[in-house]
Image (cartoon, rainbow over all chains, first blue to last red; front, side):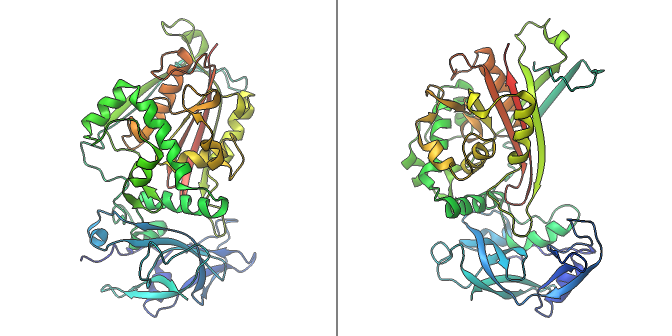
Length: 136
Length: 309
């Protein structure tokens, strides 16, 4: 099966985020002035334009906000995967990430909204690691 | 066709505008809904955060459906009613039947709720018959100043209100609320009409959930009550309960070349001229609402209210 599509660089907003995944660290940003949690990574807080942001590391614990089990994706990296779950997970630190839910017997039955999940890592041949989530 | 009579418009230097759209999405075998993963175009923060996860367009909308079901108890049976009503309209529209024939639909007939639920799952909880087709297609609309429109062979249909909005998903946002919640109130205010006065609702039915969310956000019912709203004997052109929905057969069953806004305007106009193949008796007011982008992520909404003389 071909590799999943990889993040591509140079792309300055998300590059530090993906660099940190090489050490299995899940980063997010906080506006030092307003306290707003910023995600996905950006150079500016989309709420006020401030660039006074700092990086923080998430504990990787969260809750399934919503999900769908994909039965048909013609992209070669996913076409042979069998049913897999795409989800939005709300991390405890207050950010929402698009991800996959893994580590369940049957994604059509074993995933539910409100489920507690924790980060897991899919190491890639490119060196980065893709954060996904499994039941906590 | 639809000229504007907005009192707030500046004096128009443009007297006639032509709005066109065409696409050969089917002939090009474009996998609009089932080709998740991207990897094309220049990298962006969004593409870098989404490409690795294999989110198809259908699964993006399906995540809205799943959340709507969780928050409000909406069911697949309720969503299916939208597909059932639009197919009934499509079967009355020879062009829609031709399109389904050309696309080699296996079973071209009216469908039931059970048919939708028994069609194969594409991205839970959306089944095949919850999803629009991918066809070729095109259309054109002429928008003219009143003095020009009055002189035309066809009866004019008036644009009496419009609104547009963009919506982004944010940390903690409610993805069951679409950009229509912002665009529709502007359009209703400009038109000075209420949703319950509308005879025909032309809503971009990329998926059944798209319609359900937008019926709510357009104000036909309260947020969360869309499931109950579509379960009543409504949506059909011959129902006494307004509004009739997608009387040409919609993207679900007549045509969908990748976008659908132009066809919403065309069918709404046909209704207000008395020319639809599923004509609502004495239709006087219609709304067209288009949605672009990814409903669970970032998307746009455009609402246009149309009236006849």
